Image 1 (cartoon, helix red, strand yellow):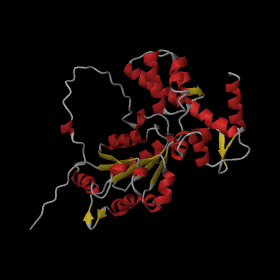
Image 2 (image 1 turned 90 degrees about the vertical axis):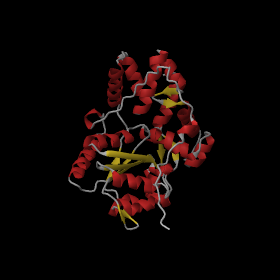
Image 3 (image 1 turned 180 degrees about the horizontal axis):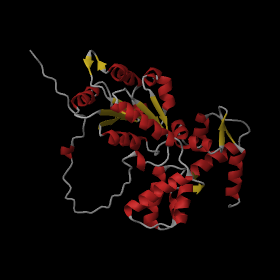
Image 4 (image 1 turned 135 degrees about the vertical axis):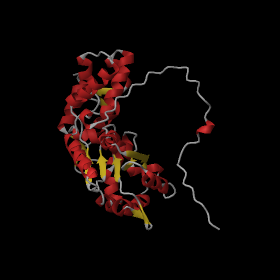
Length: 320
């Protein structure tokens, strides 16, 4: 007997959700640049995207991976790439991909009426053995002798080190590796003014300056602080609500520095995380990058506070 196989899109069963009458009017503002001309900062990344655009137009394989801190615009950059070439963006999250639903996305690629961009966000959350299944797909555009329409593969991660360790063969098949850099104070201010202009609000320049210096130079965090200010109208209270002490550093950041300041020798990341009541992953992803980049701690390879870190603690102690 001939059996017919139907691929079903992985989805949430919305039939279980009661209808909402939509009587409330909620104001939703979300500034998200659609084209490279609107995307602030990241000059090197934008230059690579421009090259990728031209390669796609000339039917040259142009896969890419974007590595960067949370809230720095990785997904936005992929969506801009899609807009710039009028592609069909097929996107998912790494943790949701497995051998059972990968065929669904490949079917969408083959049926696409535009150039397909297959985008996997948070690819580091995908099981390594499943990532390896993608190798022949992105290199030869086929799987199990089944031809796949040529497409652009894109993925994003905050943990490229994990991929280098677990799936280096996969990374070798991606020609473009984009690393997003920490934003500058002025770039954050530009992003905030773009947002303010969109929603037609007036905010004092000093407020913008304070936010830009206390968001760890993170666009997503800066917008969050600004939106809170719209409601509270007291920037000091906004910073207090977000547990920000100084220069964007939170109570937990200061706790980390204070503990390191009590030590006479370096300490490993796991032991340090345990002492400040964090998991090692939380510490490494959420706290350490900024503390290291700003020069408050060093990795040698264990963690140790720097003179700059000690000086900051003195300033806080003296109320400076």
